[in-house]
Length: 250
Picture (tube, rainbow, N blue to C red):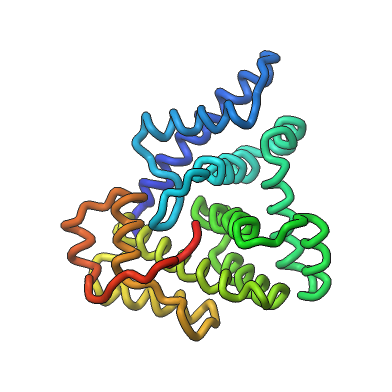
């Protein structure tokens, strides 16, 4: 497997941004969530990076992308221990999502349901998708194994059976994202290995229907998020069939 250049670039940008944020905090400057979001936008524009996402670009994508900053700051730099007040100020919601992830992965489904209901209040699709994004981001940056995300998706289905549709959509998004990432890194270089990865990931989810993304969705992520040239996606992806709506949530 080739070195994932995209991960290295994002890590470098986020570490530099953290150094700037910590410098501001240490100097006594006011560090607000809105200010950090603008700093994140500026840093991504300079480096021509796209937020981690699916095929769509929602208006609140950079608010969601704060999760990347949180994950790198916590797991890559240990800043949650060094600057707990800064973390509490910038990421009160993400800290709750992180705790909800822990609960879902360690508690029995019925008990987990009660606890995360109290912790998160609203259990709407957007809240749960952001919670899943925390673990997905950890996986992307190499701080967690992908099986933990698969287990989390299964745990959502068990603890919140009425949200099974969301679990299927997120599993589909993750498979598409993972295949697009593998194309970008050179891990997947032909249609046979692409199909093998799609099928293997789908099998791991344990979800029988609706979880395998079509290639148009994968191409959208590969080209727009990972900037893979079309000459490469054209060799790996087929384009038969129309893209379904609502392929997944990033």
